[in-house]
Length: 456
Image 1 (cartoon, rainbow, N blue to C red):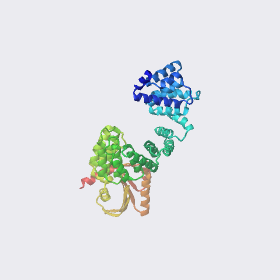
Image 2 (cartoon, helix red, strand yellow):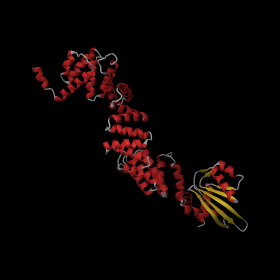
Image 3 (tube, rainbow, N blue to C red):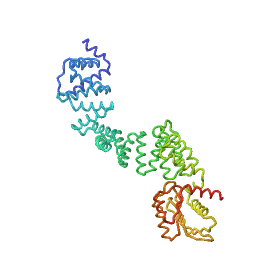
């Protein structure tokens, strides 16, 4: 009677734990006959359970009942490091002890492994459990999650799709299914899965950003901008959201808005060096596209100061740094159609001074180059010349020179002159050696542009 009264004084929480352990251990052993001392330990507190189990393990380190008591106790108390080790031993004993519930032990071994990020062991145990029951949500979800971590996205999607069919309201299933599909470039399916996850957790910023990426890749730019709009001030996703927002705006030539987004991204606290460089690089290119070279130069200078080899920042700085001080070269490379054609006329005039120049035809090949067919005459000679002004600072190959030669023959012009702010390849130079075509590279072009400036 006195013994029973002392039991009543045990805290309720401890009693509940003891009862849970008892139930789980009974579940873990199928039709086992319990030792009388363990039976008594079941009815007492946590410390008594541990003491009796450890006493048995001292006598027999592989005592199944004692190991199971401790494994279940640690598992319920979320001490997964210890439960993992104990369930690991129990898995070995399952082969020789038919009273152990191998499936239950395998699942808990796998779950313990997941919690301590021992994913290789978890995967192995989940696969063993799946051989017994392939329709259990907990198995398919975790196998899919581990495959996602391994970047085996196709396998991950297969497991997670099955998990989704077994449980249609689990946010993590939809999340990792959506992300796996996204990594496979299946943007439509990915967007559907991520939308479902957002229905369950509408304030999840990671999912919001992922959906924005999917919509961006699907070309649904307006919808993507709405996703990114709510993230631009976020510390974790803000800079990335600003990059996407700025890129979208730049594609639609909204350069002022694009620059605003990139500048906003640069204000994000705690930015990593790589992100700062990327934002500055995109901002500089946006300024260049907006014909704001003087604003682009400081950004490029800052990039080069931090990393001389970052993308083509160095070459951009050299090229546009020169353009910033040479207006005529800037017009040649970047000016609008009207200003560029006017520049072409001036170049012809300085090449052939004291002549009468009559433009017969002007044709443009998109923004790559402009051809001007001109009748040039003086008191001593007259000729029809085709001038090809190539708007590049890179190397011009043989193909574009061959095309000019074909046009000269077709129009029966006397000769051709090809001008570029870059250089010509060896193949191009060899091609014109025996033909009436002159090649003018950057160095000579800059001299001609300087003559235009001095003749004003």
